[in-house]
Length: 225
Image (cartoon, rainbow, N blue to C red; front, side, top):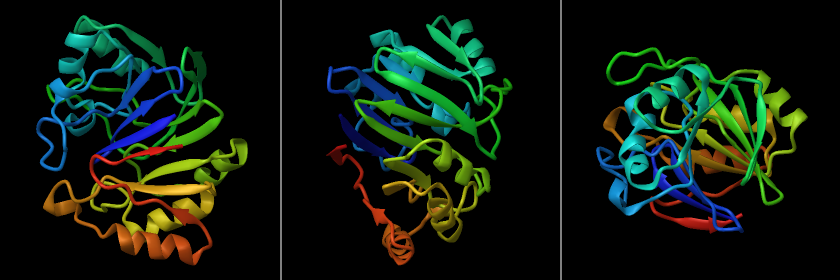
């Protein structure tokens, strides 16, 4: 499968069978995104929480391509109320979809839609697709159960925020990688706005110092997992 990074926390996964998943598709109002919402489509849209920079352009994309939204119960209900298809889940639950399995994890953050509707608990997500396992932490601070997540599931890739202020900064993100023990760490949620400016090469040095691998993806880069 392929992983493409649109910047911030927005990723596209294309499976070996051609299914397309979008995670947190914040594009049009994202000053670092290399694409706009009318340039992407999806079979599935995974939302970690309801903030505008994560719910993003999900509804615009869904109006064109009719994907299935996958998110925690309250946010899935919100998507359904807007007229879109949604699969309701919650933290700790897993489900087998056409693309593979998905499980939501805890995340320490908030979750409210741009119009003020409570979006349920924020979440991270563990995806098992085409023989690879990927952990997108969502927006979160550091928590020790990241070690448990890595013990329960052998993680090939971990997508981890480094921008500080709203999420972990670099020091905490390096510790998160140490706890979860993925094969490869990929930084996200940085340099979108001045308040979350961070140097991914500093993160690289920190992670490599604990003996782990890092891939720094440029905005718009796509890699084969």
